[in-house]
Image 1 (cartoon, one colour):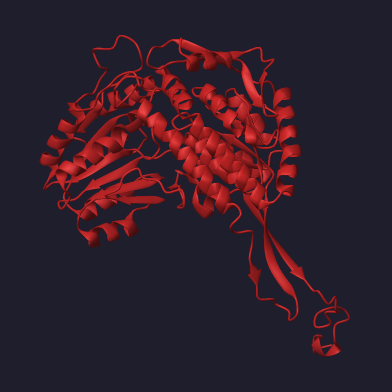
Image 2 (cartoon, helix red, strand yellow):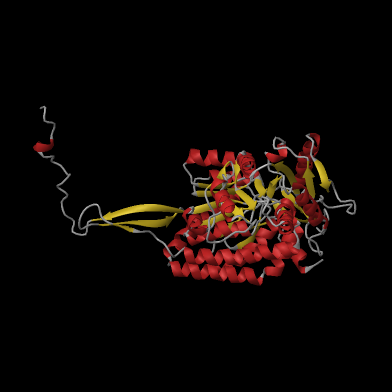
Length: 503
């Protein structure tokens, strides 16, 4: 047993509350299973309501102290968190690969992204605290204040459990809030290990409580949480949005993507095929902004398919701790869901040019083959539902206009891609795509200084950038008359000359 695996086991049954690992009194434990080996490596508690209430009370007390300090102090503490995460890099990466399945290299990258994001949030959090307006009344002082909402409840996904938490918690903390997190059941142990890096913060400001849907529901509905950040499926996102609406509680909701990938005749096909393979297969396709619908111009369709098949053949599949490019899916449940979607695609006429099943050289683990599907039509269900798996379904189009129309004929609007060397075409696509993010020859990239989020059924709100900080702030308008003078221009008594003339 490795040291990291031993540390993971030691966290079984624990939460991170009041800046310490605390054994839960939960009567139900949820097994944590390595998706590459199917071995149980730890357990997490189904945290009872009383413990959740305690964590929320601690968070509220800590938040008041956190906000009472200076922006410089908050930034300094967050940089200490980033330093600690960097020092834990190999530990966190191994834990994530064991728990979630992604290649170790991708896990290392995720840790690095956390460091960069937290440093950005630390600084931008003290950059803008409001603005001064020209007064509506001479001699007065009118301005706005930016203030925290209070305690942020965060319901996290399994695919990027650390970096998405760094994005959201970083913004919330920089804005002066406290954070209570419910991680995915699939990646709770890694999230608990991640919490060790937050010990530089005041006690109780950042807490992790484990469990399933009931734990998330309790956090969202609690009277003393003040903003909700949720990443997950559309059906659950709708429930969260409806609940927050009834409570008048602000929420950030990031749900599914079904991102299009247009390939135009001017695209360099060798490069584009590599980009397509990366966009479809990275993290076994379990990315909200994975390319999931390929619309390829008929002039280069056959050549592109041939090159994408060749790129797919190069993908090394296996345990993420080995020298591989793609690991397993996160769970048997997720693989079953994905395989049902693929079965339906075959029934509707799609054919695998490569892949399409489970790899024959693995007798355990939730592995699937990277797959290229041809003979696809835009009415197939695969083109209208998030696959969240390593598949590239290809639809032939006759023009830019047809490809764009099909790309936009979706209930989702998270991200969108186009490969073209025609600058005018690329700029036109940026305008035409109905999506929150557009990548022209640059798939899957993020920028900590730019907003991340979608339109349509892909969610509400933005992460990252100044917009991400604003998600966790409220704006207060202030008007001061330093002379404390009477405002006779509109106070009582009203002048007779301004009364209705008919009486």
